[in-house]
Length: 619
Image (cartoon, rainbow, N blue to C red; front, side, top):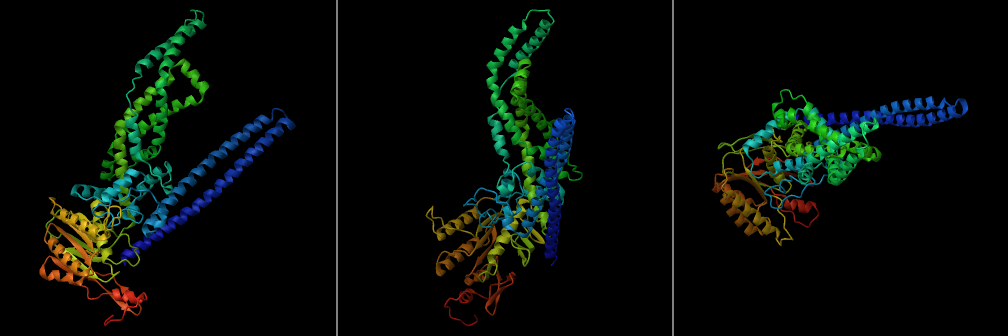
């Protein structure tokens, strides 16, 4: 009851926040419209008054009237820009809260539909546990605005060989970040306001900028030509001044001709540099406010977060300083858009070559520092996704992941994070020793597959460093392996049964591989692709081979004959889910119980659907 109350409280809080932001946004939009009409009225009225002053009152009265109208117009425009900026921020803030509510309530339509690479067909559990895809754990959690951070989060969730060091480090950072709600939200807003709209399916790609920077960072030594042109420019000025005062003949004409010839001979090699400067500035547009925020944030006692952001806090190579220097270079280059002014300035001093050299310097600095800056941002965004998940689900807990020979898996009140909070049933489950296996029987729709996925998804979250849907969870380090969503492949010519056999063979190979981490397997309806007799023989042989080996796991099945394996091997234990028939309805409580299933419901479901199935005793 406490877990549901917490969910309802968080949902009501988000709905209230959305309502407040919508009201504020409506007020600001209305004020923005008022300013727009006021500006139009001032412009029209000012022009008409100025004309009236020119022609009907006094020829000189129109100028002060026009000047007054321009001043008032600009004052109003300034306030209008402030309101527009506030509307933009509130719109982004509203979108953030709406996304939070969608993640909390599992509203898949409300989440951004951003492209991700397709799941790997041979991955041992990515597809089986719905970790990626349209309705996946990754999409539910992912708050990243950069493609690399999103992919990093996906890699953490789908890692096949987790390490205790990486898991512990990430969990420590996520624990520290989870309560820092304003920090995470402001960082998201800074990145969003400066970049493309995520709702349109766009993410910022830092690797593309790094690749471009490496391709275009060719060595170009402009110092000799710049020095020569600077000497000639200085000589031109001195000779010109002396000539103007009648102290020398016009020698400056000759030096100026040499200056122009040298300038034009080398100018062509700098055109590309100017284009690159604009590309760099535009590519780094999103990073400037993000890095500025991280540089000025007061970290206080949040030492892990401060250590993570260390490369951004180095005063000798602060991102804001280097990006500001790049911005000044770009400002200097924009003079070329005013061609007459550009021509005059370059005729006096080698402005073009000075800024071309500065571009080269800025690119060398960025190539040296940008990878470490982006590494911080990608890591932080991925961690923030897990931290936000923990913040939205306060009833979730951080697991204890250890390397131990004692109890290898213990969960209290384990649930599935992608099931709605209302009506969600949680179960306790323990695997006490290596080599142990649980056979789970039960009727159709009783909850077997969902329970297998709940175990796997929470282990994936645990190894990623995030919180788990459980009151308590402790587990060792495992290599996850699933056989839940096996599908046939028409392209490769595989039937469903053969695809399942290949997957189970790969699982057996993983168990016998030389790796200190045991395999944690999840098998749903083993050998469902063949007949009853051969399925039973194959299942019994396969499960007996797994029991007691370098693995633990769960197997769900309809074959009640398999429960007899528990009588032959003490490492095999039976569990079941059950249901009740009430009139024309099946009632499920989704509670995991010890022992084999005492009931089946396939014939009941057939009969309830209107199929011609005879009523048998007890059904």
